[in-house]
Image 1 (tube, rainbow, N blue to C red):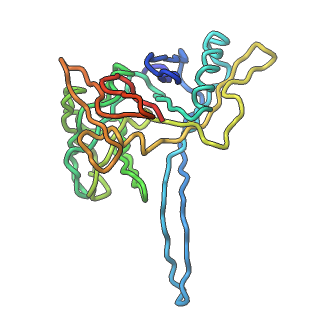
Image 2: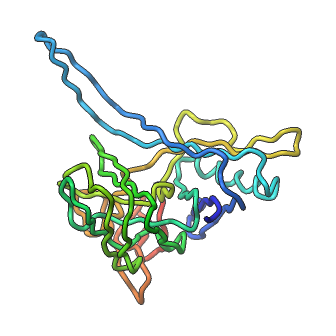
Image 3: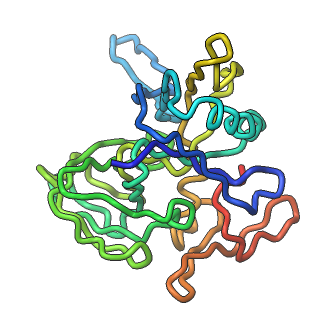
Length: 265
């Protein structure tokens, strides 16, 4: 089982990957959901619900970091990066960073799901997942659906071409649009919650260093990486000599073509 790791491209510039390896597992890792929901009650007593954005919130904690101040001070740059609105990738198990988009929307009960290559492979250099692991499947907002399935057989042979997986019991939902699947403890695009401004790292008398932060999945940026999807921000993935590269997007007049970067917003 791999250590917990963070990956990010510090902004401004954002051309160089930085990795923070905790050197150990987490003490606490759990998820919650926040939802933009409005409920109306009719004169007949009926209840109508309007659902906007539903987002997954990740809580990451590790008390008394084994690497102490050596790793703790690396989070100063990450906090500056996050507090200015940029993104980070995280895995609680850096040996398992599988991700891919659904290439054939499954029907409820289907036990085989077909997946694209991993567009975030270059940051982690890992596409691992195995039988018995869990896989999250999520769709875009508004009204995002989210479910977790157990992998029985992994037939994804390449981070470039993708493949398929056999899962236990089948999917719960019928998918009519695009969907994204990822190892349930790996999140490729996370941002800090707007209301959180406290330090990511705290210490006890300058000796013992603790990590505590909350991050939320940025679905807009995540789904902009769907290959050949015209419904979201323009982006494509191309394969050159077995390497995934990014093409076809501009930000603020700056041409980002062919730059191997993942998180700008």
